Length: 121
Length: 108
Image 1 (cartoon, rainbow over the protein chains, first blue to last red):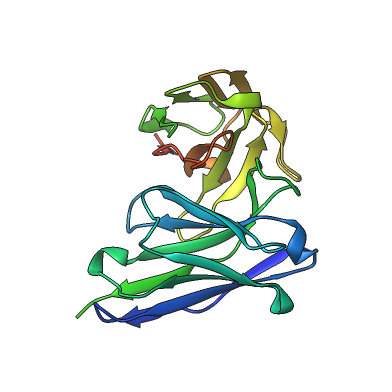
Image 2: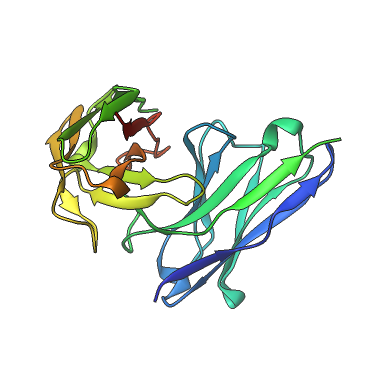
């Protein structure tokens, strides 16, 4: 069974750094793009970017480029989303999701369970 | 960047009724790279439709997708109680792979 398991909820202060994770299992981790999606409280889905773990090729939405870093460690089948300096506006649920097929232009399936990030002083 | 607009914002229907949800793109979506997702409260989104009209694995036949170019539709032929949720379209023909704002289907 293909599964994505995300790290647990985080509570951080503004200005702190954070790295959340998404571990893939049940498939060839290096052969599928994995992406990150933000959902702010009560709002819709926002595509942040994707990474191809095979060669670490990464694409960002212009809205998120420079605000976050997407990375992957193929040796442990894990993708990451990190911030160097959190803001209160980063408070959201973050989902990772794998591309449904082994190609670039694909929908997301499956999805991780989500990681809730709360940034508050 | 392709901007997706979904209408209506909220659709109030009764179980057994037909639901028709619209997704419009600001420019043509190449190769009909358009997906639909369902999200229930407290859950991650679930893929329903990809390639504008192909049902994902395990998705009931009452869900169907159609359209091409800039106009796409998700139809739920007869609403079941578990179908009341928020539905998002997403285009993946051109980066960034944007989502629409969603349509909430609630119980009338």
